[in-house]
Length: 193
Image 1 (cartoon, rainbow, N blue to C red):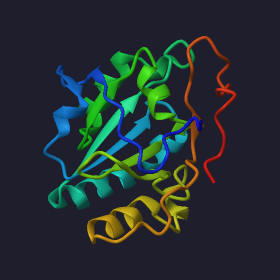
Image 2 (image 1 turned 180 degrees about the vertical axis):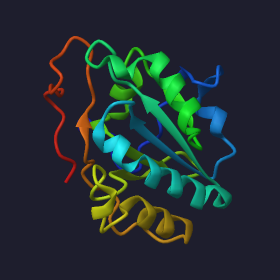
Image 3 (image 1 turned 135 degrees about the vertical axis):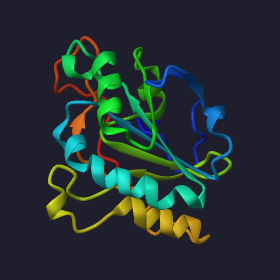
Image 4 (image 1 turned 90 degrees about the vertical axis):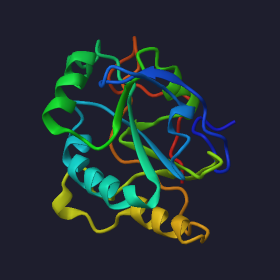
């Protein structure tokens, strides 16, 4: 069995606290026709380098029934910047157009098979996976982006077409797993393509 969710897989449920003071489950986003769940954090240069591009994508597709949900699963014992308090302050400062959830147990990251920050998962109305991987091909340096794979996938999906490239390798820092070296990845984790 693959570490990361396969195409057509159902979105695993979760119950996680958000920086807005509420708690959310998968059903909290039932009104969204398309749900983009992405694993992110506070410190990763690939996240920081592409956050504004992700913001633009979230805002561009919001009126087309697409909702973005961010999840931080990183252990703050590896990077203190990934703590809950830093999540709250980061959202206050940047006012990103998504809910920012905290996966302190890392159970949600394991359920989805999150590999890197950022790592994107696109689910259809039935919450079946239609795309997984990166958003852009140069998340650390937005000035060098030549392809926005997430937007290509959303455009095709929203047009009722099959997504031509439904799997890409996420580009970023690995998820920081509790009790492990900062560069450790689960042994069954591997490139997606």
